[in-house]
Image (cartoon, rainbow, N blue to C red; front, side):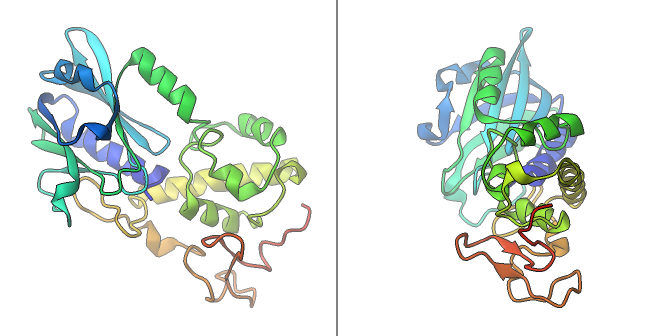
Length: 278
């Protein structure tokens, strides 16, 4: 947590409430929260927020100042959140960056990250291009069927780890990998190189369907995720297998959801997700 749907929900709220606003001040509480570009911080003061984009599980804020476009990229990591001023946090000491705005619907955007698995980066366009190339594979929301088939046909290894490999497919984490594979009726340990083309097509369609449905629900609030305005994602109410060990399979096949012994949080139905070749 958060994964692609949560990052998309964050980006959409910021875009709706702060696009066009001017960054009047940016305060960094601890320098190690900035992965790179801290020396350029003064450039952003007075810049206007021109674009908000999502890359994988990260949110990039694009600022324009005197004709130049630069970016503040926030990695949401496992516990990172971007929050508006009125949204309360359990441990405010973990707010490491505060961005103050004028001319928008919100006055402040805060970066809260207690475990600091994620960082922020201050980048110019070339830096952003290098950052994306280094960290992200294809975007599962927009990758075409043909590109996805070509990608899967050259890969090896088990299916679930591949779906979660950020340099191959950017943005899918444990929650959505479980949900996608159940709906596609694929075992988490299926060997990727043994998938038929028709099965890859089904996986592609299911992947995009699950992610879009989750985005429409604001993501899944499991443990600590909140949108910038403090609202919870409601897709957790539609989870079919994640965290459902021991419960009846929602396909009414008569079996119970199991957890893989080798992977603590892999949930599947042994009947609906057989590891047989298909």
